[in-house]
Image (tube, rainbow, N blue to C red; front, side):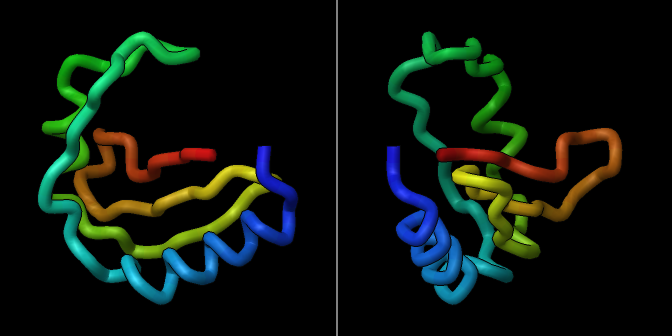
Length: 77
């Protein structure tokens, strides 16, 4: 698990490089993670725009545009 300063550096780098960009492709190589990855995960993320990049503790949060009925964020660590 990375230390908090490292996570902050990654967040700043992502904010600089991916904010306001569109997700063009999504590849899931393993759906059996801590939580099962939804079958339509790729479809949900594809062509969404990254509106902002934030951090909560050691988690990176990508805020996405889109319909309010769809999850508008993606969290990873």
